[in-house]
Length: 601
Image (cartoon, rainbow, N blue to C red):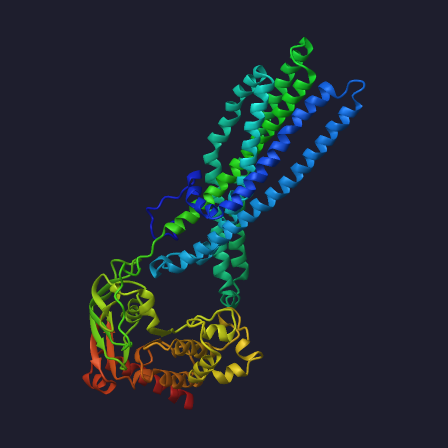
């Protein structure tokens, strides 16, 4: 957890108290629970009536001339069995359905919570581990809300009812049984913490293995390109073996706990049965009374033995609940204020940075921006250039309010971003990243990602403006074509044009282009550049570029170094100044000319 959590002070919860915050999920379905409890009580009462019927049959049903009576007893037993069967089936359906319903709600809430956490959390989080918590841990919770809770309640009811019947039948023998109960319960309580800790360790190691698998499956081409399959499989096998060992230790602890509890419970029944047999021989109780007492004791011992198993399952579920509770306890630092300032309408696209200082939470001593100040007018195209690490991408990160600056302020249309709703701020911006994220869905779903309610006409228009319509219509199912996870079936230029179409469909007043053509070949770069020029018309545009040839037409160029703006102006102005921009331009253009000359030779 220390590798993932952004709040190291948060202590893992391994006690059963970790289950308490999740009880409101079950509380949403009170009628459902009431029906299940009713069925549980009926089934338990039917089971507890069996010893009474057996006593009556033994004491009164086996004498001569009582054939009719014994028939009535057996018919009554058949009715009891029928009631037990119906009530048990009803209870099972209701309880298991409740468990499934609660887990579905829990998964939705956990995913919704993860979607609201800010970028600082995901700077250190492992997606594979988060998926493990969302799936494996919530599945572990299903038993706590479903079968385990049902079995626990049924056996508690059975245990209490059996003890009551035993005391009514023979207070003397019951006293001996009650003395034995603390001896049985003590190992359960003492070993519960160990079981919970081992169960949590098993879940943690499984999450690590899942995280490793997710990371490497997402980089399958890289793995195969470096012929790293065997090494990767070996590492995963070792991770799985560690997870297996932890799970085996947890299961061993639970098995030993169950073994001890069952032995002590039924050993006490045997001892009491021997003492009861002495009373029958002495004539102090009848054979039917002893049979009733023994059957009640067996039911009570069985209930206590099953409670030990439930205790182990609940302890394991508590480990999963603790991990889920840790996720739900994470709070985003980027949130809307209680009363957000409304963004002005219509949107203008005016941007202002005022002495902004910022360091990433994972590198607090390394200042990414140092007193950065600049203004961008509505409709202006401003390029940001500079060497790697100058802070260019950080400008976009702050502008989209993935982080807040430690000093200074950032304004959009005159509103400080910290005073506005982040969602409203982001709706006014469209981002085209260097490495666009393409989802394993259809072409249409990918373009509609930021605007799912867009019409087909709007979809087609966005694709045309992004120069993507032609290649899309050449696909097997056109806009309904599934393009594979991360768009693996498309070329780099096609993925980039889909990202541009997505930005066009957003119809935002501010366009952010982060190295949008740096990874493309000359032909695709030309297509994408033309598409971008079409999209940039009438919008405020910020362009990050290492290739200076892509920013020649910008209204203004900001040259950044070490988190500061060291130069600004048009391309011709900056080249004539002989500063950093001139050196970068000379290096790039001379290198490009040399490469062309070598190719011509």
